[in-house]
Length: 255
Ligand code: SF4
Image (cartoon, rainbow, N blue to C red; front, side):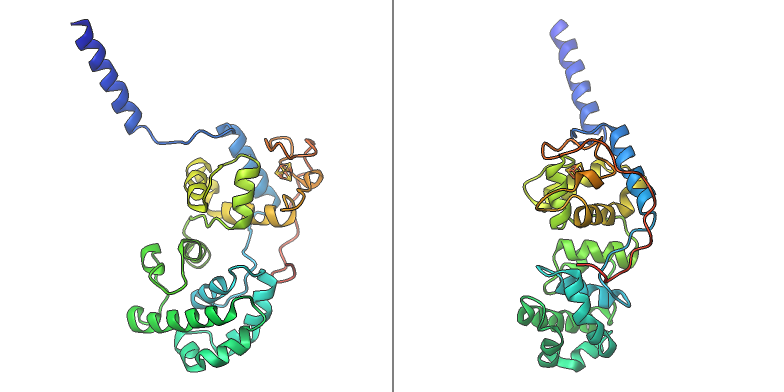
């Protein structure tokens, strides 16, 4: 009887645990997480990506070209390119050879030119010349992976996604925010721990924080607004920098 009762209780507990929202363990409490993103929000109320684009198609092309290249390097090449080819139809008209000329300053340009022409063709043939609005459809395009798809969904269509690039991957692991061995693992954890109201801009806040403060070689903890909250063993200062709103970003001005 007692054993029956115990197993009923255990089943009930198991059921409760399974139905409860899954929140991965984080070194940071909910209050700390909220405070970190509140500060990012004060510092940059309207953060933007730094890849120049005119419409969802040019954004897709810019993101596809940006793998292993700096945003500034991509912007330099695409400024002239997008003047002549800002739709998939015009990109096909331009052709692979002339496209290569426009982007030859970008690493891996031969392969990237091939992909851009192939994805333009697929957009025209399968999607009526429009960039699709779902991740499943986007990742069917040549050269478009989950990260590129997430950037496009967020920046072009305002969907709350999180594309884990090199900066986000480093920060998530360095400060123990969402440690993971792969970008997908980090993405999954971040989406679960970031408070919902901050999820939409979190992608850009983390990238900009990584690019300008929590840098790869040496984090500039003395300029960091979350230095008191950060749990990184690498941090060199725990006094937070003054929390002020930064001037609007000048897109394309930085690497
Ligand atoms: S305190 Fe240092 S290590 Fe921590 S987030 Fe800031 S810059 Fe990065």
